[in-house]
Length: 184
Image (cartoon, rainbow, N blue to C red):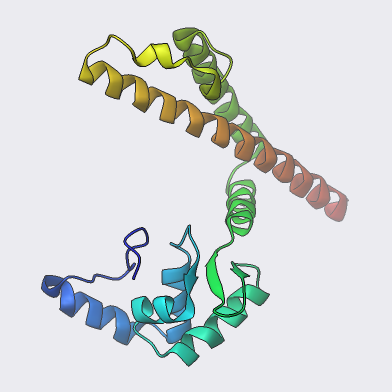
């Protein structure tokens, strides 16, 4: 079992009752889904089966279905390895936002994030997080380094969120236009 991808269900001895409930209340497919959707690096069927508390054949069957659904991607064949398909989860996030919010609500969120992005550009005197000079971290105390690092991570998240929200706003507008056309 990889240390980078903890089991979604509880795994310590103290939590064995909770893990037993997770195993009893979820099907093999659901447990494999729970495990594989946390994986950012590739793992083998046997590693996933161990984390999902199921047989290798059960994990393989579930993974085959998840690959067909584009939820999981695979590489290699001996042994095959699997991880979550980031593109699927990005698409799902965009669809959820477009369904749950109006284009106007999404544009408001975008505008707020753009303002925060501009503030960070001024703070770091750089057009993007990648352009921040390493000198920003020289000759400052430990706490200042953490504050700046947190701000850079926030800035990266803002940039990502702006992209996702822009796509969601576009999708919400398409949904609205389709709905308007259908009701006309």
